[in-house]
Length: 137
Image 1 (cartoon, rainbow, N blue to C red):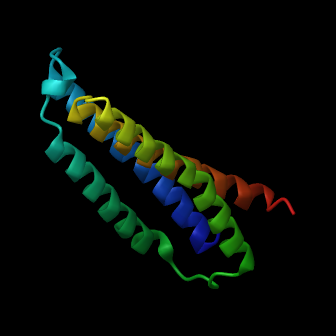
Image 2 (tube, rainbow, N blue to C red):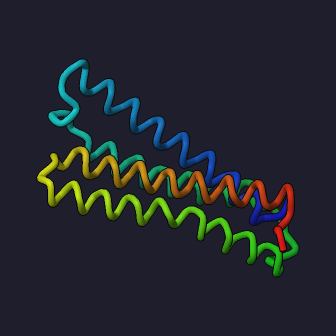
């Protein structure tokens, strides 16, 4: 397994775990009450920051020695980033429309965060699949 393939797996797993943890914390804090009145800001920031730190630490710990990035790695990386970018755009547009419509900040922030996570998941899955099956030329 190449370094880039390990990175794809790490980022995919960390994104899912971090978002799951965030969703659990917010749900527990709501305690049956309305989600819009639940304090979520600190949990969201800790989740994002923790995911970044966990990814870096896991990549260092599991990185090992590698032969370097070749053309195949670059092509797979590009394909994964392009696939995932769709959710970044969807999140930005959804957040903008929700703000214009006057939705609560809770929903806007959470839709944007969810789309970032979906972007990471789709990009990661795309990379993992392409590493397993190869690039369709």
